[in-house]
Image 1: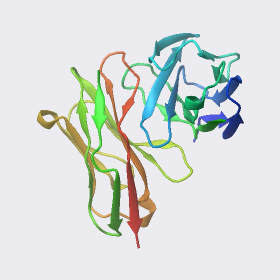
Image 2 (image 1 turned 45 degrees about the vertical axis):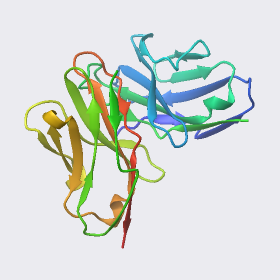
Image 3 (image 1 turned 135 degrees about the vertical axis):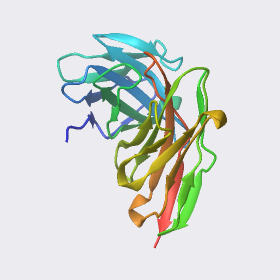
Amino acid sequence: EPEVTQTPSHQVTQMGQEVILRCVPISNHLYFYWYRQILGQKVEFLVSFYNNEISEKSEIFDDQFSVERPDGSNFTLKIRSTKLEDSAMYFCASSERGRARGEQYFGPGTRLTVT
Amino acid sequence: AQSVSQHNHHVILSEAASLELGCNYSYGGTVNLFWYVQYPGQHLQLLLKYFSGDPLVKGIKGFEAEFIKSKFSFNLRKPSVQWSDTAEYFCAVNGGGTASKLTFGTGTRLQVTL
């Protein structure tokens, strides 16, 4: 069964450094998402992406965050200057359809630790 | 703004016991409802979903959920749990139409003992 994959599984970085989290969505999917989960808290929506542009973003997704689909397979989340509070599990998801009924398939997550 | 509440944070059951996990949502319009499961060390996987029609929906692994519109609830049930059901369970909602982002509850950790 096709899966969403994410790399790395764990990233440790120092405050102020840039990080890029990578995702490979399912190949025929057109809609891509990033979510995050701070330890002990809810999974929170960050951003959705379709047709090479952001469809929707949350208030968490400020100017420090950006997303890109640099080629036909990868979908990346960049955090320009990490803060301690960015430490979380980051999940990528993809769906075939963007409307509400499109099932979102999640990757295993990248644990980001900012020290 | 939409929100989801899961009242049980940690549930411990013996094998063969029945399970019911509560989920209530707050949303002003048409909703689609989901239960996701995360087994230890694995991805979030969709257990079941409700879009419309029969409010009792059946999912994988013997799970079912009932949408009760008047109570804004979508509780997850299983008549007889197994040790392999030990996992974290998340209720989620999105709006009808084009609003596709999922809003999750805080999750319920289910521990099934032998």
